[in-house]
Length: 409
Ligand SMILES: Cc1cc2nc3c(=O)[nH]c(=O)nc-3n(C[C@H](O)[C@H](O)[C@H](O)COP(=O)(O)OP(=O)(O)OC[C@H]3O[C@@H](n4cnc5c(N)ncnc54)[C@H](O)[C@@H]3O)c2cc1C
Image 1 (tube, rainbow, N blue to C red):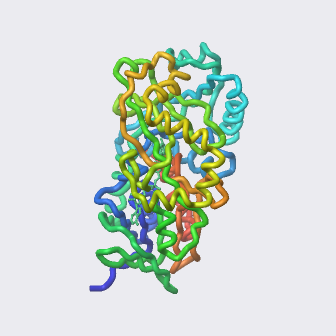
Image 2 (cartoon, rainbow, N blue to C red):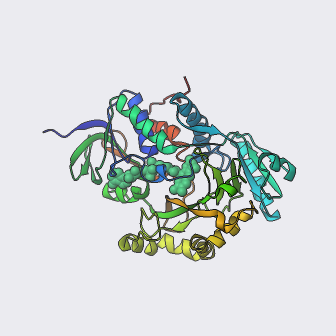
Image 3 (cartoon, protein in one colour):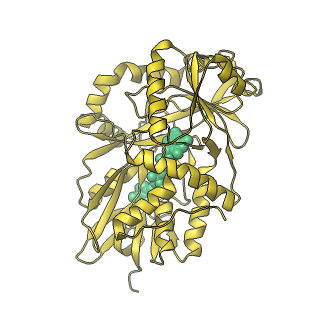
């Protein structure tokens, strides 16, 4: 039997891989997605906050800023067109201490530069949106929304298949071999050939890059983000989305309270070092992976620089009392007994050997044209929001072809 052959093979069936395959299929090229899990969207895409980000936070001119702003509008249009759950709720970013005000002013500057509508509110103004919130000032961002990214990813997968693409589930890619005119993608159950290959392997993207003979230049450090569900009483204290002003030392947005599309309210995610790449709880430990993480020079530098924050996050992870204290900064009426564990996601955060936490999306090309491999080496939040524009960006890098955004019918 001859090896199945495609114009493009995409490794990884999360939302970024699927959006890439969708962009490729829209041009009439043949495409296959190869996913190691038995279902799509089992990792970051299916275990996140489900927020449609506006593009407020990101450094103007970077990929995150450009692709999140485009992705915010496009995600809403996609949900409308395909009748998927979503709501444009708006959100508050709340400053609780005077020292946060300059950081909030910087967020406003970034939002203005990125073309994201936002306005500053005083205490009375913020209470009109969220009567139970405590703070000294807030930014209101009307375009932020909520959705269900697993449902979006599954819909994109359906569209890929409808356009003639193939989705191969339960096939882990173990090696990638570049040849002059094509690339061999090796799995335990046989090879696939792609003229070009795109790797969107999330928590394992650096590992797959090495299996393709590339030097990723970064290591993926898995940071678990745990959620706490609110009791019915405490859920009544939250109307929409309430965020803190983030600490600029970290590429995380801070523990926020979110009313999800199913009506449940949760707070999270925190950020603790996971003990395995897919380490969704303290009980999931893979000694080899953990050892690789903690002996990576970049991780040692991160630990040295941020040990205090790290221990604080661990303490809040292990103690409900400590977690509630953090939430009470914005929502003083929430009590420890209102919180219950509500799952977790694991972020794939690229870290350089010098300890830099890579902030922007990172794409690395191994060659160009036939025989090339493109690696997506950092696609953390807001990559779910930005996935459709990221897919078009990758298509353009592969083929030079520019696609128009999807718009609601
Ligand atoms: C806690 C948390 C909260 C977040 N909140 C938000 C939010 O509210 N809004 C937002 O926009 N973004 C959010 N994000 C970020 C968002 O979830 C990610 O940016 C996005 O899902 C990345 O998609 P992906 O396809 O790159 O990765 P993933 O969804 O992780 O997909 C990668 C896929 O590759 C597969 N894979 C790995 N290795 C192999 C292999 N060898 N062979 C074949 N397949 C392989 C994996 O099984 C996986 O399915 C959050 C993330 C986390 C963790």
